[in-house]
Image 1 (cartoon, rainbow, N blue to C red):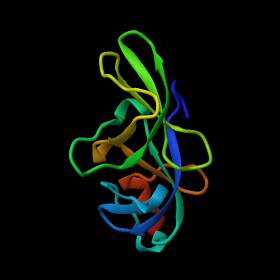
Image 2: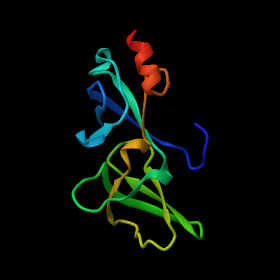
Image 3: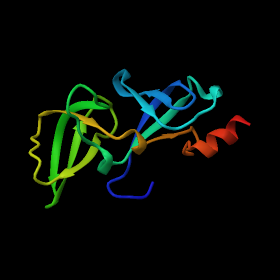
Image 4: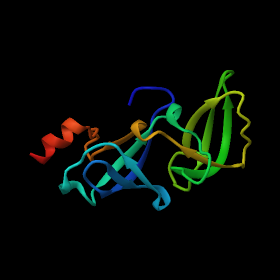
Length: 137
């Protein structure tokens, strides 16, 4: 994937195919993604992706990820925040404004707009409405 920092990619399972698609990921959290998928992919193992710049601090009880801040990389106007969300691989990375106070060890909940979420099949191909319709045919 192109970009720096790289897109956050997590293992997930399709819980509900159709439009929208519902996936479960780390810790059993569920995400509704506005992408149509064929019924044949229900239960499939997929990759769930979200770009660091699309993650934001969640307000309220609706959130995608919950974890602890591992470290913060200050880059002036922005900062990269690395969050341990309980998976053994790399931490989740979010890009936040530099003036947002985030401290190492703090609990953090993150969310993203549904349109900024991505699903990839086992071959790394992104599900889009067009591709999902073609796969169903």
